[in-house]
Image (cartoon, rainbow, N blue to C red; front, side, top):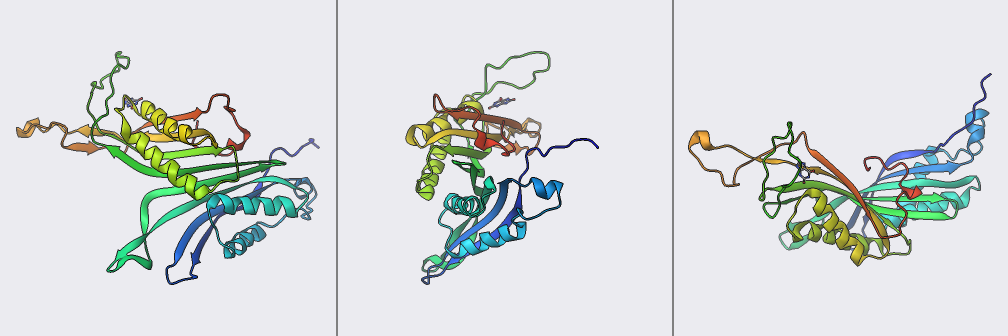
Length: 297
Ligand SMILES: O=c1[nH]c(=O)c2[nH]c(=O)[nH]c2[nH]1
């Protein structure tokens, strides 16, 4: 018999879809989440002995998500912290875990008499994300957003790159810059008003994107990161994954027409993929809490 030991493992229920309507008044609130709960700890006997006495069923984890939603969500970060503290507090052998959520954006429909009380429209492509990682006494919260589509129609260029035998790209000092931002930022505290900080980070990301001339998407990411890290000492690090959604000027000369950056072909692929992390000086460049977050360098 080959000796086998158990390496890293975690388990739980993935993608629990929960919609919480707060209906204390006629003006309803909606919170729409996709929650994943994964436990880590001593689960060797389940893997080696067929003994499930430590296995808090994934079905139980799913039910806990729905039961906790009865008390309200509040913010995805707080909701995940409640779940994580519950599982690590309730079961001695659960020493940590990973709790992750996406929150979908719903906005009130503008009705005849202003914002509607209980009718909503999906808020475009953007999704808010949250992650809570617990390892023993360490709890780390990472907030984020994905698929936030932004574009500026001028004040962007790309020049000065190496020209060699495979280079055909012409330099430009006036192009469209467009991307779909996926960003995640790591907090150094857990006692925050997460909704308030999220709203402010989002608006600073947009301000950073739009503020200055862009020499490259790389340069603009640094502007966005700086806007966030300067204003939020409770954030140690922000990571980006951003496709450069190329817009090519269409050659209209065959039709005898000029095209001074007015008509573009919006290519969906291939796209440049620009990823970068920015940290407060002295922060941990490889913090353990990023483990399992795919799609970032
Ligand atoms: O903002 C850009 N960054 C690049 O790295 C790059 N490369 C490229 O071909 N175009 C661009 N644009």
